[in-house]
Length: 408
Picture 1 (cartoon, rainbow, N blue to C red):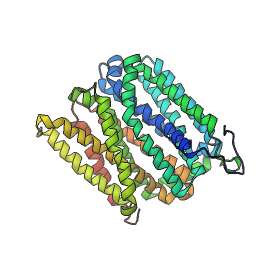
Picture 2 (picture 1 turned 135 degrees about the vertical axis):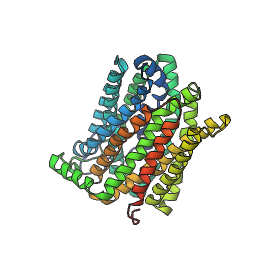
Picture 3 (picture 1 turned 135 degrees about the horizontal axis):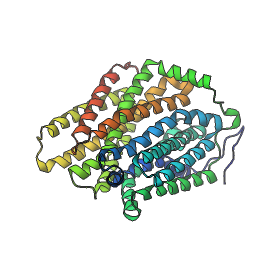
Picture 4 (picture 1 turned 180 degrees about the vertical axis):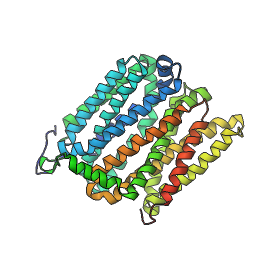
């Protein structure tokens, strides 16, 4: 067992395959908490919001909103208290939220509990990445994160299918005990095997004045603010699509029963974006990759709005064109979000930890304010979603074009 904080020496490292698998499990907590809920939406709507079924989508955005709020302080807290405390504390809060959602009698109480879950999951989500930075750097760190993300991409593919099996056996509320079991198993593995990686002498006290000064610097840097706005729009496209996809498959195409399998196909195809980005970003640069991707998606979604809005597609093609478009939205996320994070942090190297928390938190929270209305506009067709993605990408494109050409 390798537990306990170390001070003045390099913490013992787990064998690399075990370390990568452990990280993937910790990151998977977020994806599992979102994607496993997708098949449950019809039952949630029927039981808790029969008069306004679109509100069931808030099961997704309330979790994301809580996660965004939690991200504000998770980075600074892990720098002050250590990685293990923040990860364990966050998981405890996550499990409390899942338990409350399990027994909540109304939709609004379920949404409040989901927000609490999101607050908690910010702990392992952010502190685990800081833990990697403590142990590795440079190309070795990038290699480890790449391997972790390769494993992580399998989670969105299998989570809805697993969620559908749980619902079939235990009802939609049975998903919440599954979240708790997954979190406890993963955190027990972490507790027993991974030592604290931030020595006491390297910790930075959490001081409001220092934090406020860092936030002020971030929010007065024009490039960083523009990138936060662009990231907000990218996240909004992703979360709005996640929120609406199950309803489109169900109500427009009558494919509720096979939705988890179709979603697996979407996740696996869009997962290739990370591989393509890794190959192209070194050659083309982050700004060019993001700008080109948004331009392509704005044209793509604009075309979809015309085709679906005017009913120009033959009936036999409607589903396949919609499936293609959905893959491109998730593919866009893989080509943009990581690069946008890097662009925002480039001029913030001296306060990288705080900047990572603030940038991600702001973009996540603000994106919910955009994504939720897009999702709630669902009218039985994919048209409102396609229009929302078109508007978001069309707004993001001019912001990217005003970034300095030297930005890479």
